[in-house]
Length: 350
Image (cartoon, rainbow, N blue to C red):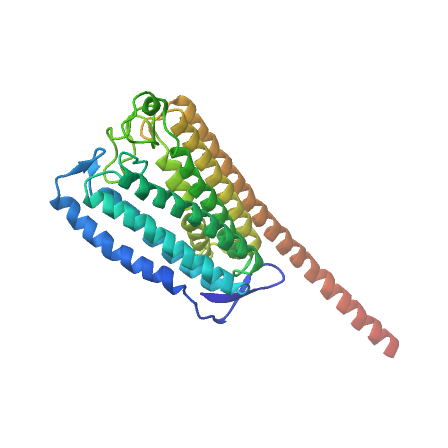
C-alpha cells in the first residue's frame, strides 16, 4: 500500500510506498485454510456421505474459503495500524487461534460423518459444540477490540479510512448475527433429537439448498445475513478500490470528498441489504423465492442508493463547472485591472 497525502481541494498525492507489516499468525492460518480448501475440494467429489443434505466436506470447504479471506484481510488491516500495535497483534493472534479451533471442530465433525453446529446428542458432541461456541464468542470480542483500534489510526486518505472502518463495524454486526441460529426451535423442544439450534427458519435443517453453500431454497436461512454481513470487511473496501481505479478515467472521482461520500452511501446501502436479507430469513422465505414485499424492499434500497450516488456525482460536477466558470470570468477582470494599472503608470509618466 502506498501512503497518501491530500491536497487542499481533495485530490491525492502519492508518496513513497510504506512497507506492509502483515500479521504472521493470521497469514499462517490462511495458508492452512488454503491447503484445507484444496483437500476438501477433492474430497467432496470422492466421498458419497451426506450431512444435512450436503456432502460431508462441503461445510469444511466453504468455511475454509471464508476464513482464508477473513484472515488475510485482518492480517493486512492490523499491519496498517500506527497506534496500539501490540494490543492489535494480540487481538489478531486471538482471532487466529479461535478460528483455528472452530475449524478443527468442523473438520472433526465432517470426518466422523456428523454435524458440528448445535450438536448436543452425546457428551462428546456437547463438549465439542461448547468449545466451538466459546471460541466464536472470544472471536467476536477479539474482533471488536481490533475493530475499535482502527478508529485510532489513519488508514490512508479519508475515503480509505471510512471504507475500512465501516467495513469492520458492519462485519462485526454480521458476525454477531450468527447468534440468531443458536437457540433451539419450537420443533426441537417438542421432539428433542440431540440438536439445539438451527439455521433454517420455517423447516428443519437439511432440506433442498444451493450447491456447496447449502442455503435453503424452500425456507428462510439465517446463514445468509451472517455471511453477507461478515464479508462487508472485504466488499466495502473493494468498492473503494473500484472507485479509485475509475478515477483514472472519471475526473470527478479524483476528488477524495466525492469518493468518501460514495463510500458512506455504499456502507448505508450494504447495511440496508443486511437488514432486508435478515428480515427475509426470519419470515421463513427463501433467498431464491422473494415475494412482492421483499422485491419492493430490494427495489427501494437499490433506487435510494442509486439516487444518492447520482446526486453526489452531479453535485460534484456542478461544483467543478461553477469553479471553472468563476475562473474564466476572473481572467478578463484580472487582465483589465493589469491594463488599467499600466495605463495609469503611463499617464503619470507623461
